[in-house]
Image 1 (cartoon, each protein chain N blue to C red):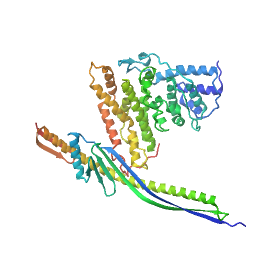
Image 2: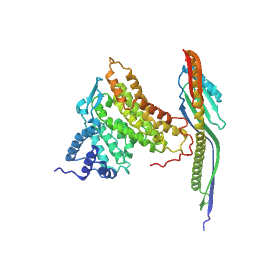
Image 3: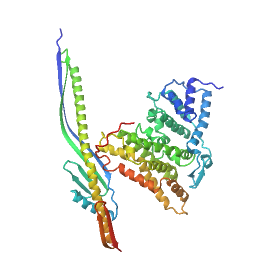
Image 4: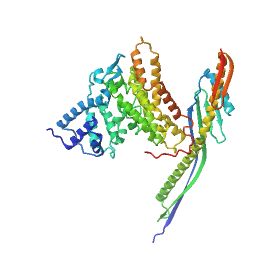
Length: 364
Length: 187
């Protein structure tokens, strides 16, 4: 039987929670309390941590969508269908000391009351980035994500911005040094980065759908503006990379999330109904435009779909174009039309007209 | 027994304050004819509503000071209102002192008075902004209906021109209530 110190047990419990072996409810008390961490982990604890991360992170990736039989383009522009490990070899996920530091930080800091943030000087590996992503999810589930929003290590992670713009924008929208033109290239250009992004497509659909559905609870225009600007920047940069490397299929989650939203109620109040009317009209207008950030991204994807319709069977990107058209089917022209109508309503001149019959709602 | 003195200071704030609020949105104008022709038709409709044209911009200032600007090139409409005021405020602070001259206490009182003036100035500025916003809010719905009407009429006029280009117009039926327009053309 392997023995570890109490502090090491906390670190290992956090690692197990990150990869889904322990539920968020069980680890929440750890994340909310502080604990003095020794300078480094012992060899037994380190070996157990490596084992947990090595197996657990790949399993988490499979559970989050890698298990599904889906179609994606490969480096040659051909379309392959299958589960993650059928389309590609297993991703080589290396974890640097940053992952250890992440687990120690989560286990040692009381994330609600502490002022400590997580910083890291070196370049995170793909495994590190994935662990940061899982940490965003866990801290959000436990409602302790405020320190994550202002931690440089998370804010410099493109994967975290892609999956959790709502968490990170609580700090503020990304600056150029946090997200730049090449930030998403490692996840689109090929190699293990694209394996990870393909596997997370389901997760991204769920996340972006949820983010849109919760916009209706936001009261402060500044919060909605920061979120919308973050979403716009993330989508613009991801789509630029996707165009550069011929991997527009990697942005299909935008179509799927929009399709899910357009099937439900499409009242603008679902997005902006709780915005305070105490703010100026110009600020409220910026907030309304920010509320439509996903729909703005959808316009660019729909222009790709239009282009795909004109691709001939002997063109080089015919297979990829057909894939894009298939991915567009859940939304379809009708869904796109509804999305455009909603966006038009959000930016209408009289969207903020005085309405004495609509009292301000208390935030839920 | 030491005497009690009262140190009193008075600070004044004079400031010119300007607040502004507004919105900008896109006009949804169908390009039935060439863009330049559509702009001319729209400009003519806006002129009927009291807009004055200056190059590619049509502008109107209403009685309540609301300025509506239509940029024919960009296809945008901007609605804004500004308000200005000369603030002239005075604040007094006083406190007891054991000395007739107490420069440190006087400095503290001046600072307190200044802070109070700044808070009052900020509050007044915010109230002005709220009034400007409230005026604009009341106007937006009617303004939208007005501009939508201009755009619809411009579109109707463009459709008639287009129809005339296609052939001989036999009949035009317009329903003011529904806004529908039916043009029968002999090609």
